[in-house]
Image (cartoon, rainbow, N blue to C red; front, side, top):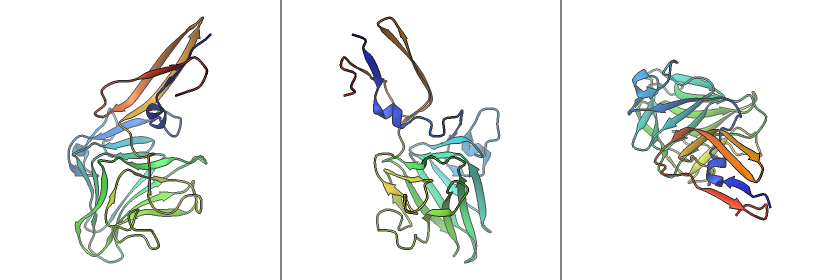
Length: 231
């Protein structure tokens, strides 16, 4: 009987969400979001932009800062937070330090994922605010995090000013997904897979995969089933 091989669900959940080639942008040291030296990239601008897999490793703090307010607009990007993302508040009640992520897919995507070691917190600054916004498939922008808290959000999810993982935010529209972070196991995982293929030759199956990132991972475990079910 042909054996059907499957890789653990850990790797499946960590696969690329938009089904396209993606640039890994990883924070190499603590620093401000818009400082090139904060990030490690390959041959492209160091500030995260579009179609990026953005990773803040454990032990590293990346700060969104601007005295007069800044907005970093990303398109079809994913942020995985194992360390800390900080939003400083600018001077002026109407001013904001924002990260805004837009998506062009109609499929639900985990746009921001916070691992069990990660968090989003409010930093220092003035009397403005710091927000993380997700533009839902070209439609309404949802505030997923605010240093001032999000009105009507249950405590422990995005009441502000701190969110501790595991938690995630999606791009799906209300009321399917609330305008805040949701706690759960879909949060950031240590391995992201950009390619996974299985080729059958006779009674043998050859597996090939390529990882985008491996953070504190030690091994891959492949399971097999003789009854075409996964265990």
